[in-house]
Length: 245
Length: 281
Image 1 (cartoon, chains in turn red, cyan):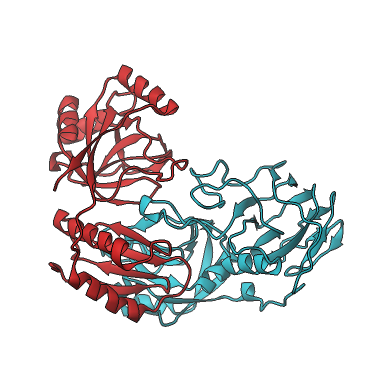
Image 2 (cartoon, each protein chain N blue to C red):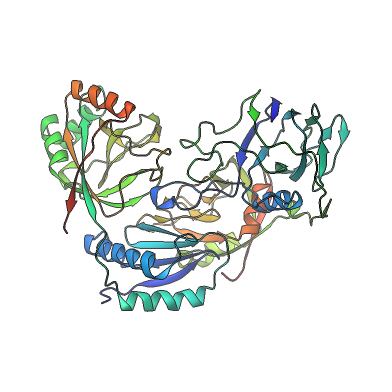
């Protein structure tokens, strides 16, 4: 079972890049995740190999030693051809609370004018969709989310802000996402999420995995304050459910 | 323990870096000049993952509050121990109250200070390397105190090594990157021509080159990047990612520096010249 033709190439002396056809496609992502599962359980020693998935590629990185590229190229081809007989890893839908109060949604008014939609319409569109996590990068715990309704596509701000708040929820082009920490950024900010997306104190510092889904739900200011306190003392209960897909 | 009476321009704790968290967006971090790190730990017969101090451009003044042995590697910074000049790449015995001072930057840009047994600062995600948003500090302020296990007896197998002065080299060896094929003849000529100047945009995340080459209109999906990845922006800027660099990016990855070339570049500062030489990947 090898539905796609994959390309394999060296990426420096420690890493190998494996690429699927260049498009944003959940079927490709699923194939990638199955293959990673197979690599981690049957093929590679995960103490010495890191696997970084993103959209249509995975990068395999060896801890330190230069690797024998030709050896691994052949191996990867045959591993992929044999295909994964494993069960898929359990994937989750995470429901994340967002306060779209204008205090946080500092660009909501502007976005509303640009998209010619009322603020409640924007909130409804933003919370109605499930977004797929295609990658995690840029910042620790920053999710690349796919599946934004086309009605919410709005260009990046012409000048990036020097400081965007931790938890800020933004729109930019075909993307939406959460800033996991304070950072410079050029996205249009429409709200704030109280959930800590990245905590270096946890053994698994980011609860989300590539392939999971995210859905936002709107909360009032009072609820936001409550969640914030719950998060700080560590009793906030995340809402998650298992995806079958 | 030691105390930084003055901390210097940008002094941080670094080790071999953080492995195993890149799929969550966590940069590798670790010593910018991996060669200098490994030499320092080797001379002290430390484990290779022991944490050291990375000292950038202007160094600290340090008071030792415990006996130990130290090795300095990397950049030469007119270092003195109790006002006597001391050599890099040599084991020095330290007694309580000794003062280590860094002076004028002579060669290179980043210097390393290792103590016997390594610094025992907190481990975050399996590494002691400072990293923004992960560790409490990203660099050490004045009066910082760093813990280590005292050591009064140590007979090094090798007391001193002569190193080839790699940090004076200017040729960076690199292999083709994943998107090397997007480059046209004109761009290739520029890249492997007369060379580049390190811009003032240089830090632990990335080094930008001052001279642009012609740009491109290639769009690609975000994919993994590594320390040493050379990105080409649409406007034609060359950005070389370093140890704190982001784990994914959307610019074409045209070239990939060797580990040695990363060490060489880590010793370069604003205005220094470098050139690129293609080697087999």
